[in-house]
Image (cartoon, rainbow, N blue to C red; front, side):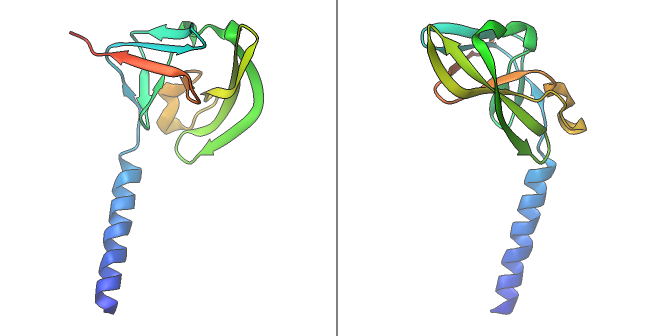
Amino acid sequence: MLEIVLGVVVVLATLIGVYAFTRGVSSGRGHVVAKWNGETIAESSDFEKADGQIYFPPETVKKELLQPSDHTTECWWKGTAHYYHVVIDGKTNENAAWSYTDPKERASELKDHVAFWNGVEVTQQQPK
């Protein structure tokens, strides 16, 4: 029984190690749009992807629709995420956007790129 438990632990540790090792940033292909409350917040054909999230280049984001938040989260491989409220037509979607202003080396491509969640609809059209 002990051998089985140790075998399971070794397999899990290996899987976790492979998962952690394969983390990274990749360039996206296609056209992406982020919308909330009927307004386009960001739109680009040049973007990055990490952990299943689309990160928009800073110049493609309507920064006038974002208000800085005090909220932050920490990712072990990307660094500290700084959040923003999305404000459109007097409605606020709290902490619905985030960015890595000083990412860790492995996520350097994400510097100042913006990702969205919490009801912000991000759609991607694949290139033809």
